[in-house]
Image (tube, rainbow over all chains, first blue to last red; front, side, top):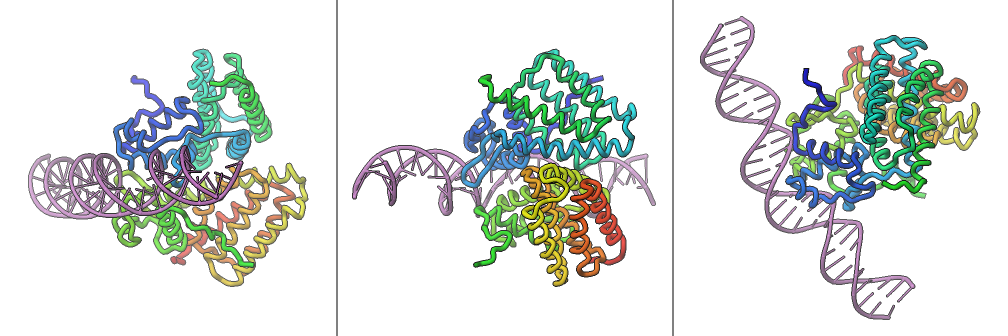
Length: 224
Length: 224
DNA sequence: TTTCTGCGGATTGTGTAACAATGTTCCTCA
DNA sequence: TGAGGAACATTGTTACACAATCCGCAGAAA
């Protein structure tokens, strides 16, 4: 069987394709937060018209990956500590309620059909950690949380959460907290148990922990 | 002093102005859910170019007021019962966490500086109900919930919640549950007390109640 | 009859070129 | 030093053309 990547569908319009390309460049850290994205330059570099660039940038702006202001253009989004906290609060709201819904449906001990995809995602995270490829680790980590949220079966909560993923990935593209390999996978296995046991409190503890680590990593002089 | 409306600022670009105009038309129920929004027609009617229409429609699509698909154009969003439930779940996630945050800060009895704007919003709601103007009632109602969420001081949660407002207004533009005048204001005064006392449970009860009313109103043959 | 196929027409997506509107920089002059 | 204002850079908008896609419908095939 042909192994499928996360996204093997090609976007139908060139504007969407350009948005994909720009998103990838931003999330890979190829462009710094705050760096301006000039329409003319992008049009030239990608061989498309300025109109197409504009629609792509508008799409990324609605994902909050870039900040756009009229007559001032678009820049890669900058996430200071304040934004980080606000973001984690929103994430907490979504993840907390997702966990509550799942527990409401299945009780404190979630059935295998629910936990299996989560465990699989954690296993992927462990493999990514072993590889040492930081972008891959952050993607695998995002997938763990996405899978936990998906278990609630609430499409809008899942979608809102997915929207935040990009922002987190952007954040982590430029900040690498100091984790020994395997620690993340281990931590998230314990997280799953906690979440089934104590729900929202576990979610908030987990997010507070990650917020602290990110802030610490950011203030240390370990620039990318 | 000159009383200021909610929005006395004029959008700087004509695309944003057009988006405002279209949003108003949609929320006033001037166009039915599912109705197509043709670029050429809108360009002609508003005296702007098709490109400007496209950016305005893209903005409304990112607010979920219109559904857009490549090569198929944009239509006014349609909210069936399934979407309604998913939407209320997301709303519940945000409002629940907002209330929890506020209680975490101020305890079970919120201080006057917090409750005062909420009471003011409920008073506005009572006045709107007395006027019988349904769109005004729905806007006042949205403001009550917005103010409750704002009390948490979490900008991202507040913003996510504000984004949902449009969708609710769109929904209510075409469904009017059977409420005696003053009932909504009364209900929300009680809601505020409940929310301080029992937090998330009160939020969920309130939303479930409103969901049931909307569904009931929708299945009855009271077309707009 | 039912289903498939292809053909126009309608509508959206993209490109090119130009100009208007706004932001930004830097120089002058008081 | 700082206010004003000319250049310049960049974005917003328009017009027009054409390509890409969707949609409805007539006719062919089973």
